[in-house]
Image (cartoon, rainbow, N blue to C red):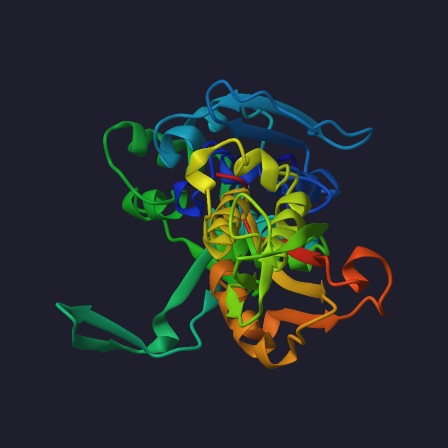
Length: 383
């Protein structure tokens, strides 16, 4: 039996909020599309694969040393248009055609087998999961009906069809009938579509949470580590600001901004982890806007840039080195202020105070310094 798999990968994936089509986003060891194609390319019953890509998108990483032939076609405005173009490229020898969403990269060989067999036997079949929850139909925020969950299934892909059935289905779509998937078009064309038990792991990646979970499943949740360091001379007549907290003392750090070494080290750490340069690049002391600036605000802006780059702060560890005064009583408030700037809980921020045991300028009370280490977690593609 000649079996063709059409991989639908022409969508924009706008709900994920990325500039790159979601199916072309790396989830670890390759893109969603590459993982989906590999699943079918490795299946012994698949004779050929047709991949439908967005207009102007060059294929990448879709060639394999062994396996079925792979054709690339350009998709259309709607899913059904894209699948129709994919069907046009299907070999005339094909007996069964499967349609699979590229955004379902965890499809298993067993599910592919079940769909092929059911499509060959019945003409049309889809993988679907029985609902585990009671379904409520709601209108205007009010429940108007309760649907027995025994009759509700959640559609997945692959969806499989005998060639003649899919040909009629595609023709109906081209006549002007619209539907969300090929199974719905097949129903409209008068065919009975049979259900095979789906797989709870065969998830569709749609949101940022889905992407994060997929990367974790692939063991590919990217983490980045950055370090930061800052030092300022202590002079009379300046407030001693550390971690956004003003500590009573007769000296403070000399600097263009408020000289908050804790915030400056933290800013360098998170910017460095995201490969976004350093504090001097974004807040240069040659710019009058940052004269006596609140460094908590600078840290908050750096955190925004890091989030735009697709990362969240997992944790931050700070060490403040100061001979006197002791900072331990101010540490809880420092953690709260810094965490607020980073947009995380205070349980992710550590602040420790150390002295320099009378050694060098810090030990003589002439300077203050801070070291920081930040761990970032990639949660989405850069915007």
